Length: 144
Image 1 (tube, rainbow, N blue to C red):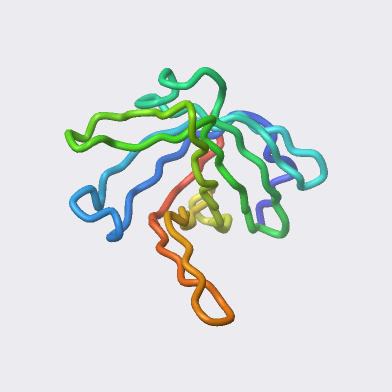
Image 2 (image 1 turned 90 degrees about the horizontal axis):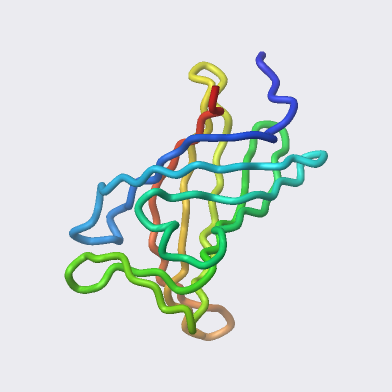
């Protein structure tokens, strides 16, 4: 079994939008993570070629890696969305919801694979909450 001793370094990935994204389902976006791993606690930055230049500060990553499970939160510096024409747009006066990523290491292919979720609405319902979540899949591979 191949053991990953540290996630520190540069990682290339992509995410694919799920069915909840409607007409955008299946769209794929590349990203690059620069991670620092301190005993399984990870933090770093994310660069997305299609949108990173729209922000005044970096997209941040915070999470953990334990026994093949990678879990992290991606946080855009401000609200990011596609306008009605599909053009990337930011609103620097509003916060973007956290995007939760969770996945497992695939030893055979030397890659992480998983799912992400973005809660876009929470409504109190009885003793709990009803949430509208946008989902998708992602992969991540160490850069050479």
